[in-house]
Amino acid sequence: LQGCRHVEIDCWDQFQLRSCKTVPVVTHGHTLCTVESFDAVASAIARTAFVTSDLPVILSLEMHCKPERQRAIALALLSNLGERLLSCDDIEGFSLSPEALRGKVLCKGKVKAVLAAVREARSSADVAETGEAGRTVSERG
Image (cartoon, rainbow, N blue to C red; front, top):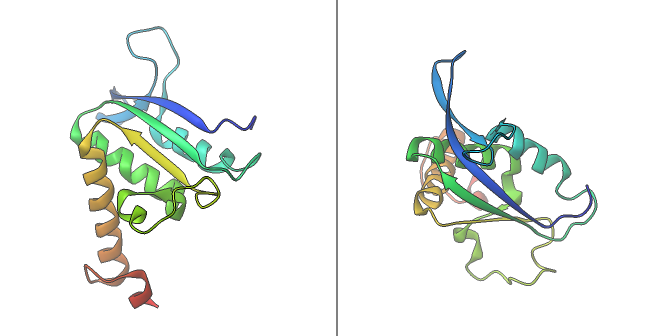
């Protein structure tokens, strides 16, 4: 809420005893720090990112997760940020000035699987919503 525009997020895999599955979490690895689910962090960012300013927010994802959890991270970002999440597919013909990016969240990271997972998740969401792959937003009416 203090207007931070860039956040580094350290993403790790963690086994949950209650659910008997591995989930993505946010923590500073190999230290005695608190651990929070990635979904809770994405939700908090969605609620607070534009309270102080509508200038773009940059999420720097430091990825220590396996591909399955990277897909879960992509889905969490999509479900919490929705249209505010700017993807590489959205950039074509888009002005990258701070003014044009108002209200948008940009993600950066070194793992290509995250980009592929976001594209896959968006494609799956389109198929689930329309029953057809490849239709554009304008075609859905």
